[in-house]
Image 1 (cartoon, one colour):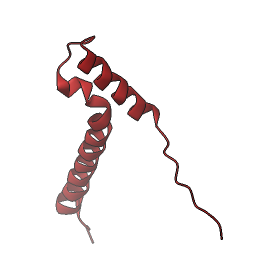
Image 2 (cartoon, rainbow, N blue to C red):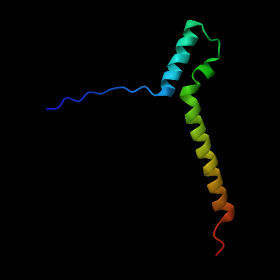
Image 3 (cartoon, rainbow, N blue to C red):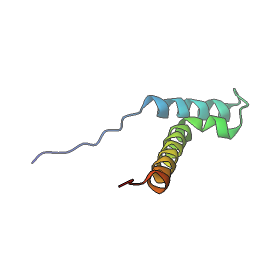
Image 4 (spheres, rainbow, N blue to C red):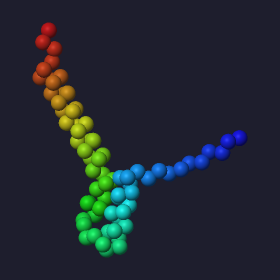
Length: 69
């Protein structure tokens, strides 16, 4: 039988976020917690906003551009 081992990989974004949190807790930076946690939420927020914009454009094309036949 083979033994499966699970390993964790830390991405650069995750490492940056952990560094920011450590620096904030140690008092080396005085940034707002919004900016300290930014590496975790900025990319998902951008992707959600882009998906929303694309959805609005596609919806507008279907509503106003429609089939002319």
